[in-house]
Length: 571
Ligand code: NOJ
Picture 1: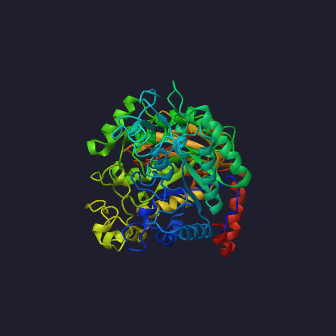
Picture 2: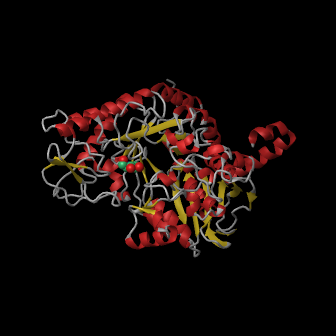
Picture 3: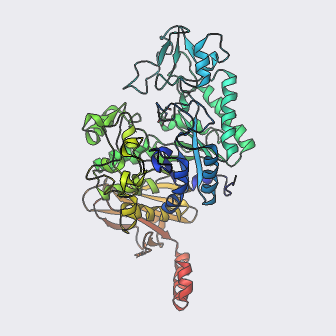
């Protein structure tokens, strides 16, 4: 097993690429993506410029919730390969400098997990207390139902032992009973197993729901934090350079305790920011973004937000008010089939009406706002979705590699694929695929590659402070990202019209401005007020260079003019 060295807080500098193994590349031609296929495509991932991979669940499961219904925590699902394949995958990823993040599904198992099979067979099973049972479905009535489209209650009747069992998600996913110390021990063993195997991080699924208590919403209970602190302490003792990421779909003030005092999670998703990015671009209004980030508390210095546009789930609308939800539904999900639970099951490109300018702008926001960005596989080429597939399957279709059969994903018979490939005239694999886009410098893929490279050239994006610049023009979202002497000024035009804006740059008077993509010099900041003009949905990423450094750069430029070989090295 190879390990990756580097800063212990490496998670602040990475860009994460999220992949379901089954969707990426099928090496053994059975219609399902697998680890050998993923290994083959690691060079593509490396080339994209991302530096960490987050894999969706890949252990044994009946796959009724795509692997989040765990039948075995440490055996690889046979469709995806073997444990040796996983080891080879981790090694090759590490050789390429890519971190690996996998899933830790703490809250529940599948009903087919041997623990539950035993627990449900007899009240005297040694595993009975691994789950939460009740004679009545009236307990914990203050708890919301998450999968509201499919589940009517968080309790399901188990006829053999004549009691109800508790589940926050599908009825076939019973919740584990974290009051039981044995359950805690079992899950700690799982954590150590995966870190022992070499994964760099664990994305901890559904953490707010581990414990239940009458009279509460059964979310974010103090007991959860006690357990997570214990888990973190054990991780720090045995695996000090690893990362824990919390999936807690909550308001920032409720997520804050998951960071503890730097002694709980290293990272947590910023769920409320995501829908506000979609509101802001639809309304050409910077306020939703500014408001939510202004309300976001400071987090401990070793901690980091994870930010994202889309993922494998529906675009969740839990962290908006009713008015905002109605707006998002009417703007982005006119067709009722696009809606699921409290969310929208669509991919980024269709949400942006396939408007390249909007897709690029969303990526500009994702890559420059504070936090570690997560990209969802396929969004880099603008893949479409399929609302005819059930549940969230429409955003989990095979990766589109080329215009060959099955989009180059698999050589299996199309009817044997785990899911149909996207086939329509706009997003179909014949049009939207990696091979086509690799050929053109301005394709979505190559544009995003370039944006990623620029972001990765400046650590301030992952680590710097954020300061908004205010102006009269609410279509413009402008901010400084600052880390020590390094400063970037980011200006995004959220509107479909050319916009002009005057910004107060007095804080950096005397600095010079260099555009970050082409290194084009802009005028010096001689006056406090600086005027910019942006094309529809345009954006600028500008580096601000302090006066002393500017002089040094000029001197260096002059000397490299007479030493052309040095110019190559400097640039
Ligand atoms: C959150 C995961 O993202 C989702 O896909 C899953 O269905 C639920 N947790 C239940 O595990």
